[in-house]
Length: 207
Image (cartoon, rainbow, N blue to C red; front, side, top):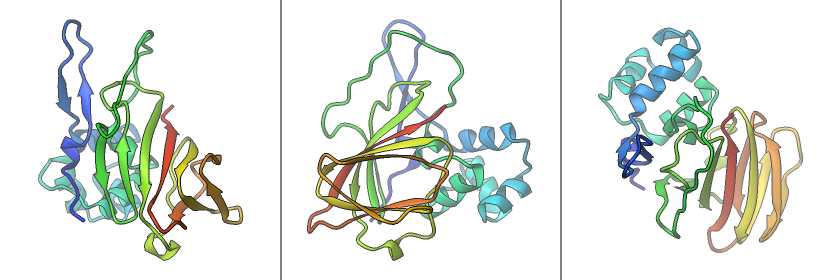
């Protein structure tokens, strides 16, 4: 399945007064800022992510669009979630905001295991990252290791039946209306047990 260009995934709304305009988040700059905020050199960050130094350099300089597998490695090395790579850092508390995402209008990112639809993508400095996901995976073997990242995560089953695997607990089957709340630093993966792809709502904390 063909992935979309990460730079066009999420539109960031400017809050400079007047009519709101949108511009794409620069993935390379975001990755560089995350690396520098940790005080890591290119070599250190690349080593933690399991990527070649030249590959990380090209990503930071916008010379290549990484595959989803590379994004997962990069997110793991930087101790953030993949969606957080496309979300600007929170700096200022802003009150009285609202974002509405009509059905099917969220930013999409398709992968082999999941298809994410990012919600409230035009709202900057969020404390939570909500997204709807279609669960394509049918077997744990389709994943390369555990998904893990900073923060807490809430999962709510919208349709179908899923199996939630986690690093420290037995697998649990969840149906429409069931939910789970867990520490996202604990490894976790989700597969669909339904004939049709299951759908879930995920909310990840960014603070």
